[in-house]
Length: 242
Image (cartoon, rainbow, N blue to C red; front, side, top):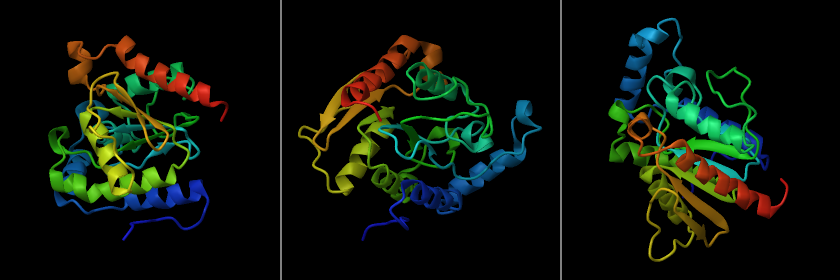
């Protein structure tokens, strides 16, 4: 049986229904306890914040042709602000790249009411709650996958997917397989800057995740990261105007 929140043919309303269900989810006891504890204890530099402390929904343009998929909200980023990739250094990298290539109206993402808007781009995550040590457990991925499946289903104009990290890359392909799409053989393998043109007319691009572990060590540089978004922009430009 297909899991679905769709209530009409309007993409915006259906995504709103899905996102409301994401925010209300309490399926994973460990993640609920962790995100609530982080919201209660806070980090000293954010002691005056009222933390979001709930699952974090997707964000962006419901008619998007670019879909960016990450791992999970950061404990003091999305779990604090209530918006994916917002309020942490990974978000600084992501929204800086999106702004440079015309997908965002500004290069910063500080809080949910900062005026940020995305054009032709939508951002999701494989798991919607901040996990301890940034490591969701297998059963948590499994429980949360229904949200990713529905999000992919509702974003029916997607032509380019950027997977931030191997986990996002593998889970996107898993969701597509569950949706009955034919995965190429051999199965695509993750690697920074690698691209695959999938049989359902989607270009899958892969990038190292812009985590501090990758950016502080130089494993991921801004030119490396921006090259992936430049490739997405070239692909969408070839396809014509929105």
